[in-house]
Image 1 (cartoon, rainbow, N blue to C red):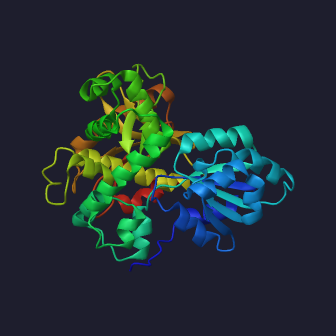
Image 2 (image 1 turned 90 degrees about the horizontal axis):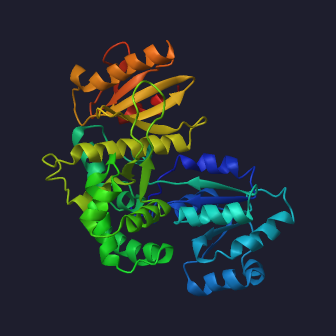
Length: 402
């Protein structure tokens, strides 16, 4: 069990892109499985990690010597520790622009890598995001029957590969170590935070807001820092793939929509750790609905990353606080989806979806409003009416197929 490798859906996607780009850059949170995925997907490539300061120094200050010691095809891990290597990579790639997939980079600081690739490797590299294990990936590799208890375990334990490779590992110990390492390494490198204690208080204050509209002024007041600091710290969490922001859907349909994004933690295990949620107290927690919504959105993103025709996700909320969790457009139609931590959702749970569907049809014409979904913890999927299907995690791949 200790050596179990979880086959990733991203593997074929990366292989395909390696035929068209000289450089592949794979971003993702620490311990999301980037290195394991790449070393299993490209066994013929050499491997070097810049985690070792002496190796990073060579790559940064003497790239020619670095590449003499580590010849392509090559996987370079933690590229953020040697940003100067990007300039030399451009020269290396341009010697033979038709040689594809020769250098594969990984990093846990997305925005910095995006800037370096844009500045030095434009047109030569593709940037990809890897999130933690998906529901489908876990179930492909071990017996994991569908049940409410299974979903509760999934939410509380989270989906970091190491926690599923080593099922005996206590999740709280993992997350305590993970948070400490994250603060000391990523936060200190990305941003000169004067007080890591303040930053940790900020993360813990943000956790109860997962799945909610981000109010930076309220957050700044709760943490006791400026709104500018909150803006900077939100960017740090985004850059290190700990949170994502979901923007509101804009369409002129009689009501002005809110303009602030919603915030979601990428992994519900870390979220539950920050909220003090365990398997024993999840049922009674006032945050269980937000944790479920965060899990569903993570699963939708993971499926969308490898989709042949990916969509863009938004949320809907108007001035009367009517809200629909997720919105996406496919084939000229708009689909709406609500998340409910219920085994038997009823008509009351789709009131907002039906009202918005009627407005869409009236304002945009028949056909603009597509098929809609209520995503619950029900063991079975079924039609609630001629417009809305009740679905579970097993059905999510079908939602994005159009």
